[in-house]
Length: 459
Image (cartoon, rainbow, N blue to C red; front, side, top):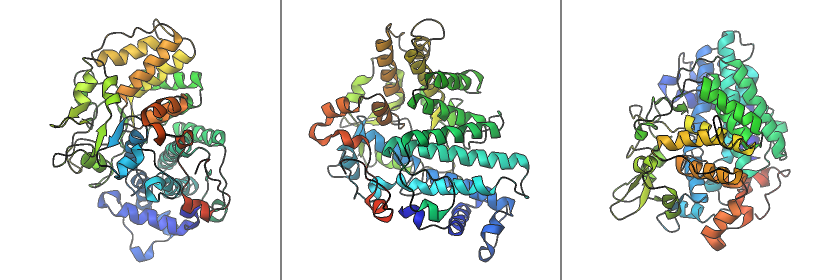
């Protein structure tokens, strides 16, 4: 495995430290660069803090990996968007033309094993630290476990079975085979449960996962994917009813503004002027009159008349191309911009709970799937759902997920987990679509490096 084999633990530690040190805001105590070793990093509280922040930096900004690309790319591979320019990178994804030799275009998410390695280091080295209080040790371990879990969620949901790397032993990890999807999900749940136990309830900011709430929110999503309906309902209920989050009902354009009470997790990297929102800014907003990523007509048609989400989150160019306007900055995000890329927000939790309730047969009435769906519809200024049977309600929930969460990285995974991907994308994309493309290919460079990696079928 290329990304694992090339790194021994000390080199990785130094990379974490120097990456985090690139923004002065990350450092509380800077060490002379010629004196940095594995030992000094973990004997200095400021250096450890920098290493933890480095995990966020790599997760959110590291090129060509990054949270932004996951959300945009899956919008293209599903039925949400297409590329304006023929034969562009975005057109390539919209035609599902990826293969195992596509280089960085298909491997950027796989490269998040770097983030996993960084998280593994914190999980191994921080507990028992003599320079950190017990509370800080617990916080850092919790953050590392949360980030490792969310990366694995995207890896297993995108590639299927993937290597399960939970240590910093480079020799062992270099020849790791693919672990079954069930084992990956078991590890994700274990990490999130530990992360929840390690940190306090108090929610300070969505910019770091230093309270129980981000881990609870992603765990609700994971349970839904695992068809653990009871767990998904319970965890989403905890977030909805006990958390400090509130749905924005007055002005839907404020949902994606920094500081909105609906936001659960939206990592903000100090000094990041070319990262999280740049791709959105340059390619999903008009730039010199052109939008590179365009919303499909099928998505536009999915909105009902009078839906305030359409009025606030979709815009149109003078020549008639629709684009997302959830994020409104027009060029580069800066520390002063009022937006961060949102990973988790409260509306998703209502829809998770609605689906979990519907799957259990709790369709209508008080505290039902119906009541949760109507909560989301009412804030969009729409009437109550007319769904009364289980099948009708599940369809209604999928419809709400489509128009509420578009361009936030959900639709691709929703089509896969509900078994609809072949029917939907086969009808939309014709000969460009084949069933095996529901899993992305493992990069050929990784397979060549690690003979124990088996390619996904079709590639």
